[in-house]
Image (tube, rainbow, N blue to C red; front, side, top):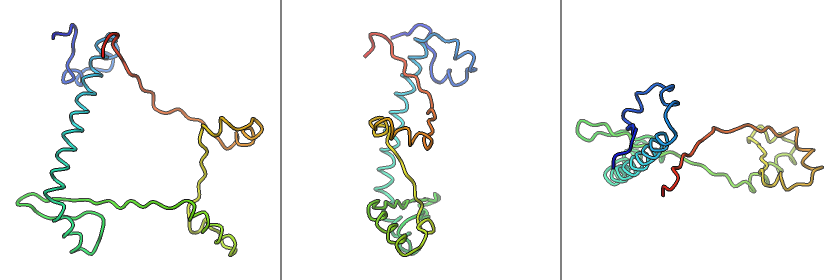
Length: 160
């Protein structure tokens, strides 16, 4: 199917921003759709390759980490003329209830828990909006609202 005024993504990346801004919305919508399709395909291809690499190198990476005396982090080894860097990041989750109890014990012992843990508080916007106004007012000075990054989704009428 030939799309009138169709600009390929390959051509688009070489255009000046002013030229892109001047494009009709229909052309921008087609570009956005093509880019999203390429991203989906690239993500799928990347996941597929990473799965194959994991199957091929997981045992060697585990052995290299073991030889280095570590459970996590980067392991380096060679496969012919190629150096493989296999990273296994460490991710730590803390039980918030347990930490709160420990903070209280540290306080009870007369210590400053901030010497040991980072303490932060969060309030969900849904809860904040549901509070009575006198409680919301008390918290307002502690609340800063910023905007996120704008996004635009272009949908052609009648398109699936």
